[in-house]
Image 1 (cartoon, rainbow, N blue to C red):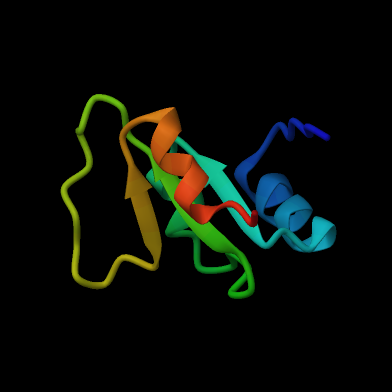
Image 2 (cartoon, rainbow, N blue to C red; image 1 turned 180 degrees about the horizontal axis):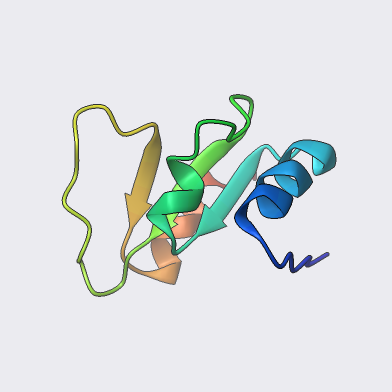
Length: 74
C-alpha cells in the first residue's frame, strides 16, 4: 500500500497508525522528527549522497535501491 499525506504531522501520524516496521523516505526532516515512531526503522534514500551523517542519527542511509534489500525481511 502507498499513502500520501499533505503535511509532515499527518505523515508522522500515518507511519505510527500503520505500525510500520520499516519506513523509507528521502526527507531527513521526516526521519528526524521528534514524533517519528520509535518502533519503525527509518531509512533515508540519498542517491546523490547529500546527507552528512551524524553520530546521533536514528536512521540508516542507503544510496541505491539495491541496498534496501538488506533491511527487508526474507
